Every structure is written in structure tokens, then in C-alpha cells.
Length: 183
Image (cartoon, rainbow, N blue to C red; front, side, top):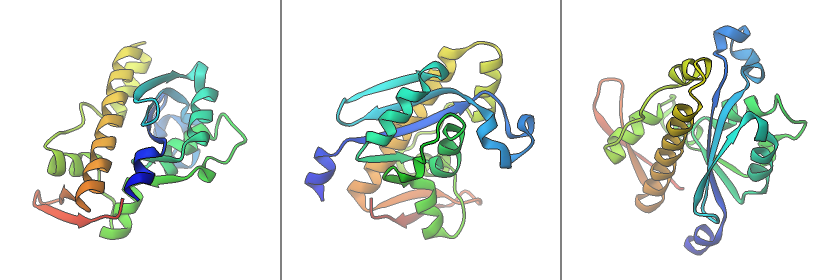
């Protein structure tokens, strides 16, 4: 398995949207939220790639070609945003959604911040609603930086879980807990 992971093209992925759920009529209309910026980190390329909406098809191509796409809530959210741009079924891409995996283990949803702060001692730099405000202000560089950091945190959480077979998280009471993972 170690050799497989070392030679596989793992693509870590996150995107930000132009609109909030409230602006498009609720969570049943995720496709209408539109992508502002998408970011990947490819283990084959060993670099980040930033995609604006004008390059969304290139982003979709990269995800569909990956040996594994790793994200945090990307199957339910990010892929659904991208389904507004393509007829391809992104759920067919080999994916590891860290949030969904942890939800199965813990029987409840958990935030990336809760895992990253307990496992890595690092937190996200902003949140999605802030990125939407930046989009409205034309602050695309701020969105790209924030999204890159989220991809980096996702990657570090995945690598930590892979190496240690567990991750830590802060529960809703602030207690540090652990979850066994098979990443």
C-alpha cells in the first residue's frame, strides 16, 4: 500500500463559490452557487494549481484523471458545484472524502478546523462566507490564497492520518479526542 500511495497521483482539492446557499434558494441548489476559485495539489506534479471559473473544464479534467481525489466534504458540495458545468458524473472519480469517512466513524459531522487544530495545531485562515464576500469585492487573490491553504490543510490531515492510522479532533465541548482511520 505504501508503494501505491507513493506512486499514485493523489489530487487534493477544494473550491470556493460565488454565491451562498441563501442566494441561490437553499442547499438543494448547490450547482447554482458557481465556482469562484478551485485549487488542486497533485502529488505527481508536486505543485498547486489555481483555477478560475474560465478554467473549470481543466479542473474537471484533472480530477477525472487522478488516481485518487482527496477533499473535505467535496463529494456532497464541491462536486455538486462542478456538476453545474459538466455532464460528467464526478462521483465516478476515485475519491476519499475525509469528512464523510470521519462521519461514518464518529456518527456525526465534523469540521476540518476541528481535525486540523487537534491533529496539526493549525487552523483554517477564513471561512467560505468570507470567500464569497471577497468574490463580490473582486479579491480573487485572497480567495486563491485561502483555498490553497485549505488544500494544504486537507493534505496534511490526510498524510497525518495515513502515517499514524488515527487523527485527533476537538469535540463540541473542546475536548481532544481521537479517531482511528485507514487512509
